[in-house]
Amino acid sequence: MTPLERTFCLVKPDGVQRGIVGEVLRRFESRGLKLVGLKMVHISRAIAEEYYAEHRGKPFFPGLVDYVTSGPAVAMLWEGENAVVVVRKTMGATDPAKAEPGTIRADFGLTISRNVVHGSDSIESANREAALFFKPDEILAYDRAHDAWIQG
Ligand code: IDP
Ligand code: MG
Image (cartoon, rainbow, N blue to C red):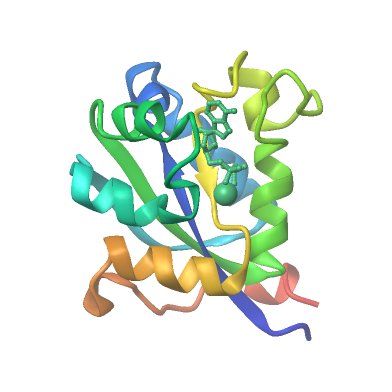
């Protein structure tokens, strides 16, 4: 069996306002990923600047911080084989105009500055981002009866 990975996903404020939270949860659940953390957060500017530190100095950075702090968001942790790449592929390309139809960003977005969801791009980013939003006791370990039918 491939080792399990854990990845961080955020439904951004536009996704919450537009009522897409359930749809995002449904898509990851139906792929077989296991939800191990879930919370609603209104991200502060300080956390947003840390979260998006790699983009500091880019022209879109101030707008990105405004966007992600503009209202409540929903933070999720998903566990499963290849969870990082599976979540990124289910979300689609950063720019919804370039994302493949059938992905979340293509099906629910039009433009890169309002692209509905975030997903970690590596296991290292996932660990860093998870630690920004979840305390250790907010990450739950449990068995599901059907895991043997999902994990090879
Ligand atoms: P990712 O979210 O697919 O990992 P990144 O390149 O890490 O994409 O960018 C982080 C976020 O910054 C994007 O999801 C998007 O919200 C925003 N962003 C990236 N590039 C642009 C841009 O050119 N204009 C406006 N916003 C951008
Ligand atoms: Mg990124």
